[in-house]
Image 1 (cartoon, rainbow, N blue to C red):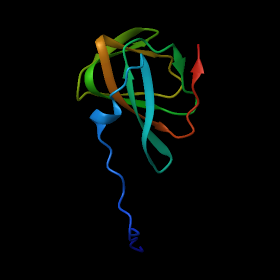
Image 2 (cartoon, rainbow, N blue to C red):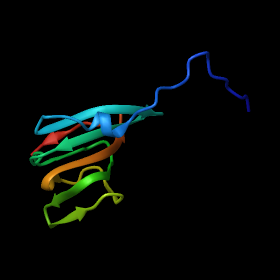
Image 3 (tube, rainbow, N blue to C red):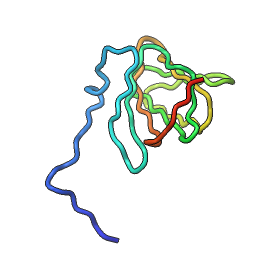
Image 4 (cartoon, helix red, strand yellow):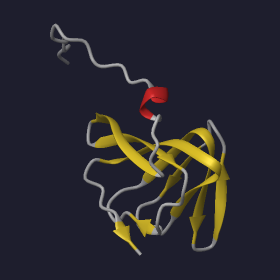
Length: 116
């Protein structure tokens, strides 16, 4: 196996606190990509609509606040440091519990979102 060396430029460092500073009710920003997946930071003060992803699982990692993930058969509440993966094709919606939630999402770069 061949070892790769970096060019003269080092990779960028991402600071989550700076990326989650927003005044929007819902903000979803691309932070990084790795192989064929992306990592996004979502800051929300209101619910996101019902939807599903037919071609990608979606993983949530709560950073700040609490995040409710609602399914057709019930809901789960995640706290900071908790992670949950939703399999592709499962209808869900997310909403902050309390005033604000900040979470990381991991999904395929070409993930489709279908509103329901």
